[in-house]
Length: 304
Image 1: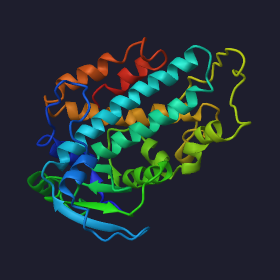
Image 2: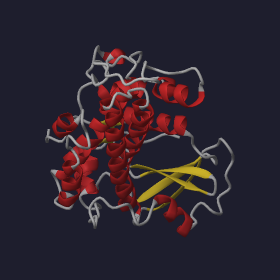
Image 3: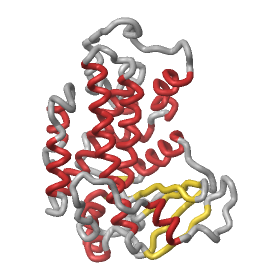
C-alpha cells in the first residue's frame, strides 16, 4: 500500500474548502469513515484477497470532512492521554506512564495521518485506508493552487485484513516519507520515518506481555527520577533521540504530539472555522491537565 508524494502547504490550503464547523467544539465526529463504508457499501461487493491490495475509487463527496473530523478527535484523545502519562510521572509512578505515553503517540500519529490526507476505517473485519491527495510530485505550486491538493476521486485501499498497531505505524511512516513539511522541527519526521517499529512498541509490549519487565523502581514505592521529563534531542539524524532511554515512549509521545499540534495550528492560520476548536485545545494546556508539558505544548502552538 503506497501513498502519493504530498506537500503540507498545498494540503493546508485545500483543507480550507472542506473543514466543517465543529459544533459543539471538541465533540466527537457524528459520522466516521467506518460509518461511511457501512452506509455506502462501496467495498461490499469487491472481491478481496488476503494480503493483496484491493483498491476502489469513489467520488470524494463528504470523505474529506469525515477524515478531518476524525483527525481532530484523534488529537483531542492524544492530548488527554498525554496528560494522563504526565500525571503518573508527577505522582511518582513513572513506569506506568509509559503505556499511556505510547497510546498518546499512537493516537497522535493517527491525527497526523488524517491532517495529511490519509484516513483509516474498518469494514467487515478488514481495515481500509483512503488517500485524499493527488500526486503532487511534478505539479508546480501555482497549478496546485488551481486544482487543489485533493483528488476528485479518492481511492480506498484494503488488504482484506484488520490492521494491528504495527501495520498502522508502518503506514504512518510511509506517509511521513512522502510528505514535505517545513513547519516541523528539523529532522523529527525523518527520525520517526526511519525508526524501527519494534522500538516504538517495545516498552508497551514489555509491560503488557512480559511478566518480568518493569522499567523503574516504582513498583513498591513512589519515585521521581529527574531524567523522565527530559524529552530533548540528544543526537542527530537517525540518532536524534535516544531509543535506549527508559522514558523513550514518553519522548515519542512528546514529539509526535508536537508534530500534530503544529499542523493543527497552521490550519488555524488560514481559516476561522477552527477558532472555537483551537480554544478548546489550547485551554487544555494547563498545569492541571499537563503538569509537565503545559509550557511545551503552548510553544508547539505558536505559529511558525
